[in-house]
Length: 281
View 1 (tube, rainbow, N blue to C red):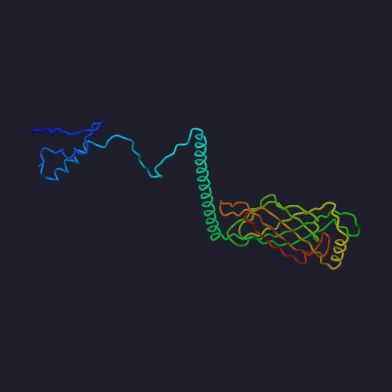
View 2 (cartoon, rainbow, N blue to C red; view 1 turned 90 degrees about the vertical axis):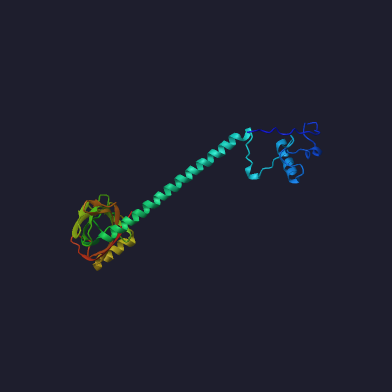
């Protein structure tokens, strides 16, 4: 293979060693016809590309979004602080979102479980009634305070559904006349299977009870008529049980309106009406 030596370029040059414009058209490639105008243009373009642009200062323009700024040294610590705070905020926001999502899932699952439990086992409120009342210690012939002792016999019915009941300790029972508390006490804890009727007895005691003159007069008149009204309020913690599974502690409230014929140990219940409420929390 033969390598042909290129023709030397001759002509005037400027002070930087570059050819002047008037001599560029003289440069020709040895393999091209000198009479061909297209070859001349090719030769000139080739020579220009080999020569390259003259040295100098150039201005390069970049789009605004491609310019990256570096904070000055005095603001470097502030830049680091703001960057770190943004990261901490993102982490806290992410943790909060995860916590709320988990809480929502737990609530939904609990609601589904409770709905299934209710449909299958049909939990219900037990029914209560007062079957006996005995009153001692109330003296209406004197205006001095008295200390009554009221014995209540309560009948609890768990006759429907498939669930047993567990009455826990910590219940409260109060007896009232015309808004004045005459005594208080509690029932013993007990278990009541499904379909069971249980009779429980408690003694409610008061100490140094003083009635207003109007209430004392009303109580005296009620005894003369043979219709003495009392109010009984019970609040008891209870759990439902099916098999070996026991629910969380709920609260049963019982409000009874009772009428007895007299204020003695042999009193007879004339009327009674009890309403039961169940709180799931």
